[in-house]
Image (cartoon, rainbow, N blue to C red; front, side):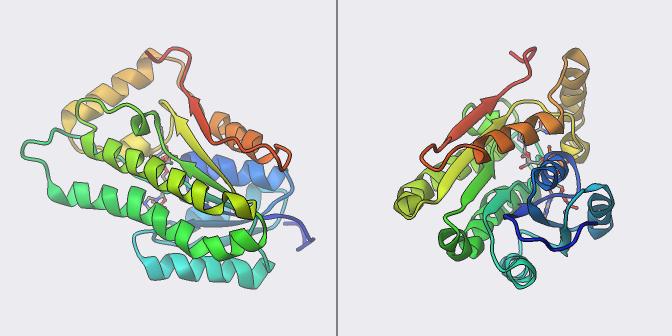
Length: 244
Ligand code: NDP
């Protein structure tokens, strides 16, 4: 890995696979020093091997506010600044409302919604100091709910509401806020589905179209970050061309 040369710093939550992993690598290629957080730390080591720049792997559970605070503190200790937060950690456990396992609902709210809020809360002082940028990974499900995705959608709608409020609060301080809303991306997201009908539906969607790849979303994140200071890309909705 490269040395600790000066340069902008990003912190990516949920970087052990999928969109977070691809975004961390893309940020490294773009010259960022990148702190990467997730529960599966061994997977974060792989980013360190593949990235051209400095990577700081951090064991992180976004459902634990203290873990999030600790991760931001370690990032600042190591790099002295934080320019970009990519709040990406999330999980999808779809199923019908009737008879649903409430533990699945709680995990989604704690991870996708509260976890994302904790990350913003912990990172905000440093982001304000850096006139930085918050990238929130939401979903098409943050704009349109569908059968079986009520709770997942509620968390993603919640992310959008929180983010618009954040935008109004920090825009005068030069902090930019972007919500990224991907359609179907081929990642490990659907591997956590336990409901057989939901698993089958996800597999069918995946097989029936040219899905997005995690790199496509990383590219969108970089687009938002590359804009000149007076341009704030607030929302990016990206579907596979084949997705209705
Ligand atoms: P993956 O399952 O591949 O990645 C999810 C990431 O989140 C993993 O790195 C996982 O790491 C991390 N994560 C989950 N729970 C926690 C936790 N408690 N603390 C810290 N990290 C956690 O899926 P994607 O890459 O697809 O998902 C990334 C984001 O993109 C999610 O917010 C998802 O909702 C969103 N999204 C995905 C779409 C898709 O079609 N794939 C479409 C639209 C949005 P670990 O398990 O190691 O902790």
